[in-house]
Image (cartoon, rainbow, N blue to C red; front, side):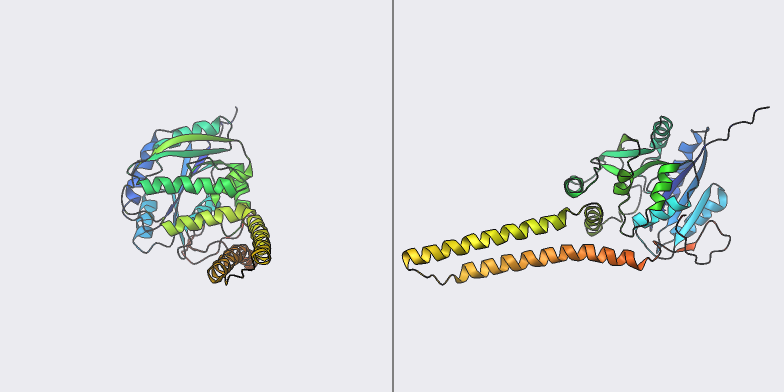
Length: 327
């Protein structure tokens, strides 16, 4: 007799940082959606990103009741992108769905992500078209974020693409091979070049708690995105430096010709200070840009692990263990 085909398994990966209030709500909403997709097996990988509240306790309580839930905990707060990386490293499904646990990434979109994957797409990205209750500043800053990345980056990222999405097993495996420390997963996924489908959605307001992505964290993420995928800032520094030098020589020539022609040698204190401040400021800015690239080289050369697990779902004890890079 022919052997029945094995059901495909899908891993749901979600990072959690100080989300004790919202995790039970997220789990209930997720389970309700998964129950409506009976043709697949599911595992749920929840990653505690060094929370200072009761998040880890809540996650372990859920895992004790549901064998599909696997809980990992990082030894400290390594950041959202590292927590996502840890979850993807631990996921064993035929496809991996990555989403936040604050319910701004609606679990109801999961069936459509699976449909697009089954249609032959290795990457299915959810694209945020609007966010309930988002301020004007948030909307403008979000558009500026994607404009900056696409203007200076070497890969194109559709406006509104979130970390929320599905990766086929081969796409997830290729992402696991990328071990750089300053991570921008949206760019890394786009860079991989696999076939891609976009699914629009409207993000709801957070179910509970407060957003952990502050303005400074968003700026840091944008900086990582630009520097990780582009050398344009370095080329821009060279071009600006050349332009300023040409302008300075032209200004000097004009002053010399004017002095000979009129016999007036103006002291030029104000213009001298202005030019000095312009040159000095420009040099400091571009030295800082160069420093960002050097700092990232320094981080990579140290070759430290991307994160450290204090609770690893692959082992029975909760002893601190470092997850080795994938082979």
